[in-house]
Structures are given as C-alpha cells and as structure tokens.
Length: 258
Image 1 (tube, rainbow, N blue to C red):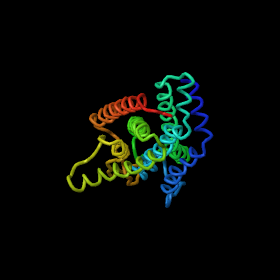
Image 2 (image 1 turned 90 degrees about the vertical axis):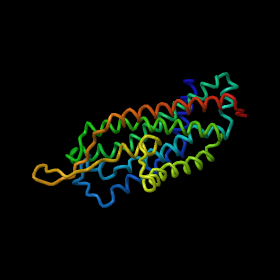
Image 3 (image 1 turned 135 degrees about the vertical axis):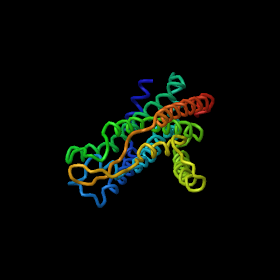
Image 4 (image 1 turned 135 degrees about the horizontal axis):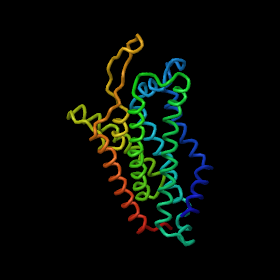
C-alpha cells in the first residue's frame, strides 16, 4: 500500500486540478478581506468577521480535491492495473482514503489558519474571543471534515466517476446548506451536527455581547461549547465516517474496475 500512496501523492502534487482547487478558498479569503483595514484587524477579529463563512472553505475544497484524488483513476483503469499487479483491493481502496484525507485536511487547515496567523503576527490576537475556546473549535472541525471526505469516498465508489461525483457532490452540498435555513425558517428546528456542513457552521457561529476593554466598547464572541455539542460532533462524525467507509469498501470489493 505504501507504493500506491506514494504514487497517488505524486499524482496529486503534479495535477493541475489540485492547484485549480485552491482558487475557490483563495477567492473566499480575498472576499473576506474586502473593506477590512489590515493594519488594525487582529487574529480574533478576523475569525469573528468571517464567522460561519469558514465552513464554506472545507465544503468546496474537499469536494474539488477529495473527489479528484478518489475518482480520477477510474478514467484510466489505474485501479485495475494495481490489482492485477498483486495489490489487495483493501490496499487500493484505503490508500485512496488515506491520501484524500491527508491532502484535504492539511489544505483546509492551511487556508483557514494562514490568515489568522498572519493577522495575529501583525496585530496580535486581540480581545474578541478566547484563544483556548477557538483552538477547541478548530480542533473539533477536523471531525466533520473527516466525515465529509468519507461521504465522498462512498459517493465516488458508487458512481465510479469523478465528474459525476463532482456534479452530485455540488448539488448535495447546496442542498445540505439550504436544509438548515429552510428548517429554521419553517419549523423552528435548528440543525447542528446532523449534517457535516451544519456542524461546521455551528462550530464557527458565535454568540456575541458587548464588553468594555482598555477603555473601549468591543464586541466579545463567546467560544465556549456545551458538552453535548462536543460529544455530538465527535460521535456522529466518527459513526457516519465508519459507515461510509464500510459501505464504500463493500461496493468496491464487489465492483468491476475494468
């Protein structure tokens, strides 16, 4: 499996689509800086200003990059050649699972944290939110990201095409982001960790209040989380991930990759 992982890593590193996938998060970051005075905004102020917009970045980046890594080899029968060369199907399957997780999560956190680190280095962290509470929220975001990748694993191995998976994944992403809005408006029901997208949005949505710090009125974002949110985020994400990976492997084990 190590050789497959190396080959997939090289393929991803030299693939133009990998870099095209970066355009969406780059555009989102640029848009978040419109009308922002970069000489005054602190790291915590940047997070507060973007808010649940942080959830959009992994939603689209994982769709573009994850599906590419998982499904592109269906086009040239690479997986069939790997099996014929003596690799077990589980090695072929889980190598793609591992590589897609590493690339997606590393790049998601890279794009999410880079502007925060830059503004913190320039202007400090600030007083808008507690750094420990925010660190916990970023750490918890790993779990719905893992869940999202695993959902695309299942989707790709069902449709056996990165193009079809891209289209279906985009529609599902749009639908999953609309569901919480519709339910909240029509039924007064608030989605939290039931969907990966709503879970990410929840982690980057903050209750706000006004405070008085250093002689100024400032907006304070509260980062504390209820234990049920922490447990739900981890538990539901891991459960859904395991189910998706198991179903994906069962489908791949019985499918024809010729």
